[in-house]
Amino acid sequence: MQVAVVGLGKMGSALARHLLGQGTEVVVWNRSPAPVGALVAEGAVAAGDLAAAWRGSTAVCTFLADDAAVDAVLLAEGGLLAAPPPGGLLLEHSTVSPEVSARVAEVASARGVGYVRCPVSGNPEVLAAGDLALIVSGDREDVDRAGPVLERIGASASYVGGGEHARVVKLAVNSMLAGSAELLAELVVLTEAWGVDRTVLLPLLQRSALGSPFVHYKTRVLAERDYEATFTLAMLLKDLRLAHAVADAVSVPMPVTGLVERLSEDGCARGLGDLDMMALVPRLQALAARTPDVTVTGTGDGQGGGRG
Image (tube, rainbow, N blue to C red):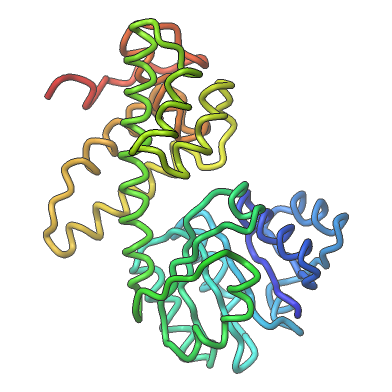
């Protein structure tokens, strides 16, 4: 089986390596060349252009940063959907708005391409371990056709309906993730202010009713004060804004999501946007006049940081 991976950020590169490790033939394309070269050295084949990504591929998988990247790579002149082969299969894994996804669906349908919306829950480490959870929607026939590829990508694929349902579910999941991250940050900063080291707190949380895969894989990050991003605070903010737009479209209030959105904005204003989402910890440390785990360069406005 040959699979093409388009978009070689952290997740796209991790997907390509995961597929290579399973013996899949992998074709790669990216707007900047460095990730392509690294993967070619590991056994992937570079696509000279986006049209070449389709040739011989069972499916093309795209992992892109945002709506603008999807527009540029899939829908623009010379993009992935400019001249696809009839019967091609597109698996789109990005966390993007239902609106841009619907535009992709319209073009894909007009050009005879099966389109599976397949955002994911998990980070590059989870993907590499084969434990990724896939959130899938689209025409059931296309999803069934994508089954052999989906099985190679993740541990589970949950079909949530037709159309853009997977986009909405993914944004809802990330809203809960954001709330969990902020509460975890508050627990760490509060208990350390009272003299309880986080290396005591975090294992306790894992063993408690609050234990979760999220707490588990953030334990090492927080214990080592390692804020190298698997998912940046700026990307979290982008997703929370998308989640709010989805909620506004159906008049559903999301007060907690709105609060964490404001806290994430404040963290980005403090120079923490390119760090891991758990940079919510040093943001709160700075507000509490405690020594932050990493340098906090901006001032922000403390929005959402008071008692309310």
